[in-house]
Amino acid sequence: MADAAESHGGGNEPQRVLEFYSGIGGMRYSLIRAGVKAQVVEAFEINDRANDVYEHNFGHRPYQGNIQCLTAADLDGYGADAWLLSPPCQPYTRQGLQKDTGDARAFSFLQILELMPFLLKPPSLLFVENVVGFEVCQLGLTHKTNFVTQEFILSPLQFGIPYSRPRYFCLAKRKPYSFVNEIWNRQLIQSPGPLYEHFDTAFIEDDLSQEDRHKLLQSCQPIESFLELKNPSNNIEAESATLGKGDDNVCDSLQQYYVPLSLVERWGSAMDVVYPDSKRCCCFTKSYYRYVKGTGSLLATVQPEKRDKASLKEQCLRYFTPREVANIHSFPEDFKFPDHISLKQRYALLGNSLSIAVVAPLLQYLFANPQ
Ligand SMILES: C[S@@+](CC[C@H](N)C(=O)[O-])C[C@H]1O[C@@H](n2cnc3c(N)ncnc32)[C@H](O)[C@@H]1O
Image (cartoon, rainbow, N blue to C red):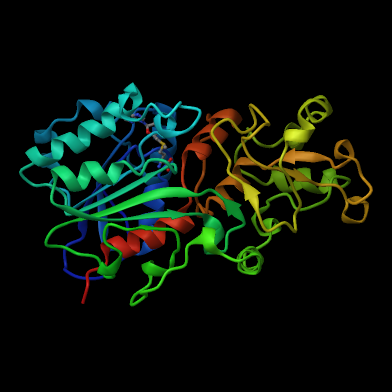
């Protein structure tokens, strides 16, 4: 058992929270950032590497097992007020062939929803994070149980972070609890506006004019603010010195971050290349660093004055380091990997995680009580 957050809102007792599919703890960091008065009473995760990282940072090792095996009695035993869930996304993505609920990987999540009507003490609040296309989740909740939902599709770009990672979120409250802005009940919302009190009009990002879209991007911080290695490619000594200060040995060779020219030659046209002054980069997936196509952006580290004339091979492309991906996912500075987690494992765990800058305000909204 461990404290999750500072005080926020209502009663004296902290809300008891269960964190399902806890990974490296993105949800728990979001809860802390949201400042809600809550206590994570248990986390559940099947991957032991992820649990090593979670334990390293929170001093508590999640329950290491298959969520599918949890019974209603197990869940009742925790007496939780809120369940936070970020189930694996493969069944719902295009790569997963959208087999949806027929896919074995979806079973654990479905199982949890199926148990809900049999619980003696069901949670009052539910929060589900997943890829866009997961919207079916809301049906399961409202048809069989007594929940009212509000659904969101949001991206870090809408929160000032130069990162495109649109995700689907389902927020649910068990009646008679209700949302601060009830007008959005049973709606799919694509703007952060309703998260803020008394907001009763929302714009849909798809409807944005070119000018508004441009404004949205310009309001983001530049990529540069998220880099641990800030020098252009000719200053390898200075960069290596920066890395040398780190406390882990896996990431101390700068060379390993540069993209081999053979890959640039073969896959160059499919690469998403960004610059330190860019205001946007693409979603980092769990396959970043293993594959270059569609797994996340690459950073051009050519000197700015040479940028325009340089060919792609001369742009000195490198991968974002795991620390930089963590920064872009808004993980706090004190988040660390234990030394034994390999570089590929770090990228895989981060790619599976979530944007704390997006989830924190959603949790704050979910936990808020209407006045
Ligand atoms: C999308 S990730 C969530 C990551 C997490 N939110 C974070 O911040 O790192 C899904 C996680 O669920 C875990 N998982 C998948 N199926 C599971 C199951 N049946 N039981 C327990 N954990 C499972 C995976 O190992 C993975 O870490």
